[in-house]
Image (cartoon, rainbow, N blue to C red):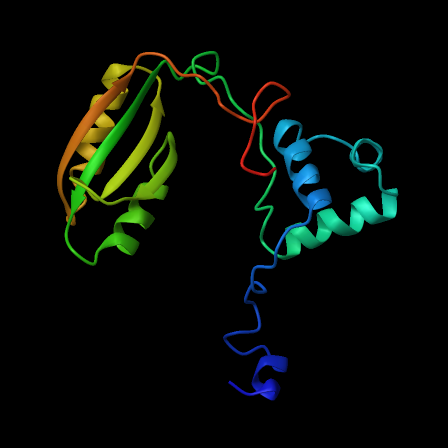
Length: 173
């Protein structure tokens, strides 16, 4: 595609820029925001020892580069009325990942979807009100997707959030 086509909003105009290495300050900013996504620019700047303008510019660059994909709250699903959680493994028709992913994204309670290697193709994490709701989700929604060949449901008895924190190291060192 030519530069003119890109300038006119061609297919590559919305592409995320290529990955670039993160420096130590970027990695410290990411650790802080993973621990507290509500941290103010001033707080981030003070804690990583840069100016507010520098912190603001770096965070915006990390967002623009697609490194930071968004900010969210960590939810206690049981306290939010979702007392049943399960990992569901799916075997799917070859080359149907995109179609299946779209169907799974529309499911109520789906919180994580991954295409994986091994004995199954997809790993899905869901949170539902109770086991009856979970059964209905699996039997009437997931198994009704034509490209899903089989499922296996693994009930979650207890969860521990491993989000980065002051006592938890991360890969961003």
